Image 1: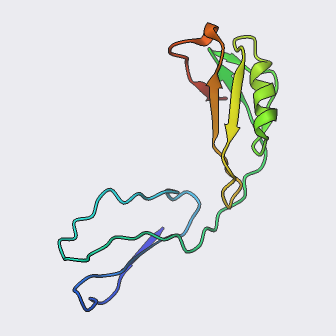
Image 2 (image 1 turned 45 degrees about the vertical axis):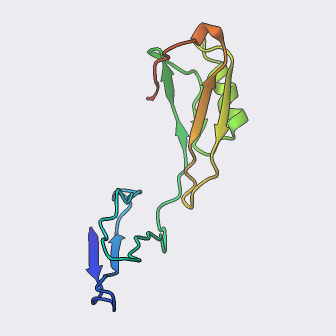
Length: 129
């Protein structure tokens, strides 16, 4: 569920809005797509005050070019571990993997760069299984 509340009007006629998500299935990211404030000095700010989600745990299976990987990898794998698993796949050559810092629930983003001319051009998605 989601709770939305609005403050009383401020001195310049603006409002403070609070949006709270109460379960882990709610969207994780809200982006401000634009500000329509036409009051001189009007601003839009977004702040995350608390993140309360279940920590990630377990393993993930992947497939590339329709073939499943032999190994599963832990969801908290280092970039080097993930790279080694990717390069063990028959359909993949030399790759470079970087990993973002984990979020409060342990989630990370992995970026895979294909470095082989074999994989030049459009490469199919790596999918989960």
